[in-house]
Image (cartoon, rainbow, N blue to C red):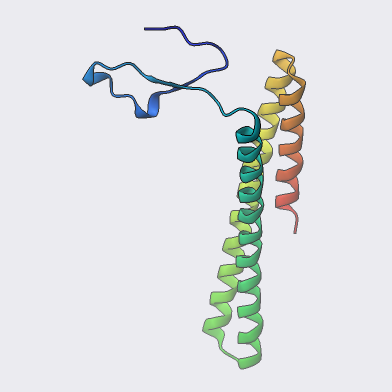
Length: 132
């Protein structure tokens, strides 16, 4: 089996050792592909957070309308939707914040300033996700 360089990714998800083949080694994207991948990741993360906030807003609107109409069942449903969306958003924020702490510590440990800065950014993003 050939040795892998540090800049290569060992993709074991597609490898089946029972067929006698070797694992697939794939290089990470470079140049424009890497920039596009990073931008796509950022856009999808933001849309995910916006979606959680919209679900929360939808529940609050449903609750407000039900108060006007006097529909208690719909009010409880709206309240539950808003609470569930808020809990989901806060949980994702806490996970992102904890991951950022780990990333920052790893960057500090190995002396990688970029990884450390990314960890700090993830912590801030997680904290922002948890705000009302």
